[in-house]
Amino acid sequence: MKKNTRINVLIALAYSLTLIGGMFMGYKFLKDQGYEFRRVTLHADNNTAKVDEILHIIKKNYVDDVNADSLNHLPIDSLLHKLDPHSAYLPPAAASELAENLGGNFDGIGIEYYILKDTLLVTDVIRDGPAYLAGIRQGDRILKIDTVYVSGKALPREQMVGKIKGKKGTVVKLTIMHPGTTDAVVFTVKRDRVKVSSVDASYMLSDDIGYVRISNFGAETDRDFIESVRTLKARGMKKLVLDLRDNGGGYLTAATGLANQILQENALIVYTEGKHEPRTDYIATGGGEFENGKLAVLINENTASASEILAGAVQDLKRGIIIGRRSFGKGLVQEQFPFGDGSALNLTIARYYTPSGRSIQKSYKDGYQVYQNEIDNRLADGEITGMKKKDSLKARGFSGGGILPDIYVKADTSGFNRFYATLSEKRVLPDFVYDVLAPRYTALFIEQNINGFNVSEADFKDFVRYVQNEGIAVDQKQLSASRPLIMSDLKVLLCKYYLGEAGYYKALNQDDPVIRQAMSSLQ
Image (cartoon, helix red, strand yellow):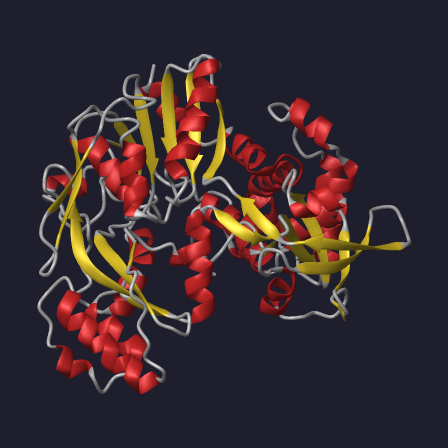
């Protein structure tokens, strides 16, 4: 398993291992950056014609000078990787899911579910969504989708997702087993548009400090942010922690739209420029919901593109303080060129620059694979864990891409060892939470005691037995080292199960050194 930060492992557990029924997640890491969508659909009807059309588009639109003719003997993916790491060809399913993921609305029934022992367990239901209105609830187990039995069948993930998702107005029949019952019930659910906020969590950290976490910059992000800020201001918020950690980006216009809510009128937010694209300035309109008041923006190595635009503007304009670790370093703008078969080309057409003229894009001169492993290299050389002097990059006149934080906070990797990695790889933590731990608690208890309760000693002993029953050897020394992390993870995942995204981040943030630093800096 690759070494990683705690929050990345937890996100992998809570999201990547969770299947979404026509709702939340698309291709998590295809939320690429600064998208514009071409209105004219291209009609190449075979792969050879598609390559020819792609080469034509590159000649007319690519950000830099390039000899497109030298690429015509390569497969589509290879020729695009020769250009830059973010120009990409999306098959029809990926292109559709990317558009849905950033649009803030989905055709589906509004449930989140998890594969637990070859059974689909409903872990969340959107209130007032189609599934909720039909009577489906958290904890239900899906036995059959239409005429196909899915319980105990170990079907591939893609098949399970595809069977529940579908076009608005179509219906799906789900055979459900409610908790504590033995009789199956059939629900006929009509798919509809389901709105999902790009604000993961919004709550008060203290009497006057509010917290907003944004997962991506989609079509509705600025509206979601405005709604959250208004609610928090009504609760007494005077200062704001804006959490953009692990935000992979999204629409450029969404980032500038949110910047309008926190920057003064006429401030330059960002500008873009490319060989075929003249310089375009994005200027704040003023009159935003949080133009005044102290601001801290949290970033890390997975904060990319559209979120880097916002962080860079806040830093250059001295609007707030940037806290965390160096951001990803993605400063390329893509335009999407759709094909008639539903596939699409995302081609880099420009670079974006912060108000002071900084290009955030890190180097990709050593090729696609080296670029893909760059974050791992930061970990290996001590940048992420703080073994490298935190000011050493600035001292050397660093120009390696990304936003350098004003205050550096190292990643806490204590408890990460081979045993913990095995638990993560085999999904044992969420399995135990959904299979054993959740029935022992209630949503009311979790909500009332989220700041005080911890997983009990009896729960932990049962977890160890659960691990052994899964055939995993328990190294007592490594178990002891990982115990605090495991206990915390179990609580966080339990809070997510009962309280959703808000509960997940409330629990996760309680012992987060970046949050502590932000609160201290805003005093």
